[in-house]
Image 1 (cartoon, rainbow, N blue to C red):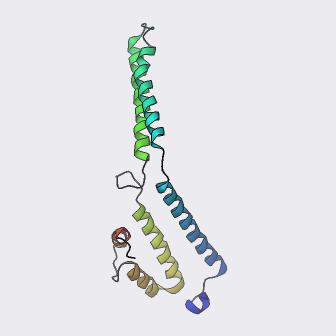
Image 2 (spheres, rainbow, N blue to C red):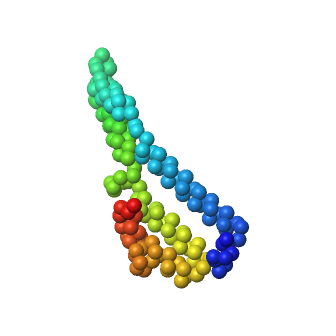
Image 3 (tube, one colour):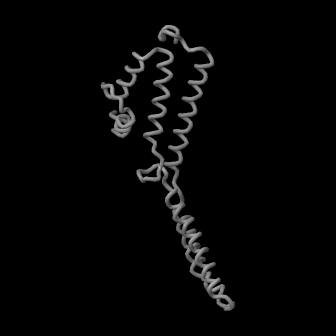
Length: 161
């Protein structure tokens, strides 16, 4: 099979490593896909936020009986409120890590790293000519040195069925 198609066939260890990498990429893809499509129970989020705000707004009443050090109580209440609200806003930001915000994962760039690994593998096996042919194939028929931007546009265009 590969001895007929490739000028330099892969040795067993290289082929197993390549197949293992493809398997790891596909497993990661399906895990991300499962994460994105799994519904999260909104009532759970709503109740946890309600309990958080009720807790934060009732903390000052716990200190009403002790009036010995009001400044210290104000500082403690401030830091408790700041910490819990900070955790809540962090949870809100981490709720969808695959969006287009500044702090989200750059999936297109990570995919370009995978493309570059494929190009290096093809370069080692078949040489620069076939690497350029593969780049042209992925890049819509033109060879560009600025592949990551081109590949990002290619990844974002809709699939024609």
